Image 1 (cartoon, rainbow, N blue to C red):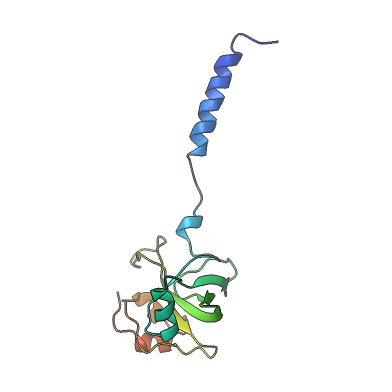
Image 2 (image 1 turned 90 degrees about the horizontal axis):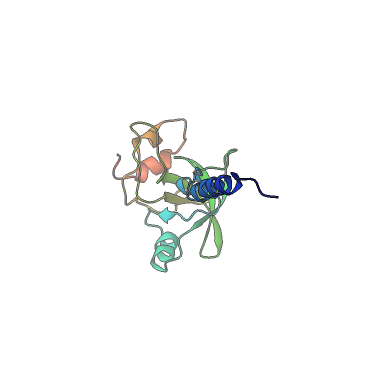
Length: 147
């Protein structure tokens, strides 16, 4: 049994459904989570080789309870078939005021003792990482520029 205003109501519902399909409120693409590809910005041999081969490291673990990487967060990455630790030094996601936003998700590779694998960091890193609360003095020592 059909009612006189039924087709008009169905048309309005279908318009709303089509509009809602194109409307996205998710921030997943704007965050560094497990599965995010990173860019190695130090001069370590492993990082250089991975970037030249076109196989950037992929985050497989984050040492933080909300599993979203921020500046200074320690992460585990899969790179060239190995598991390595690293520190996030630049993100694409929107940052707090006066914290720079980067064009790529940058990281520095570390060994198991917390020493950087490279001897230089090739890009500017945020000045925010200089805080003592991060405990990244060895990374600060090999950095050449700060933003």
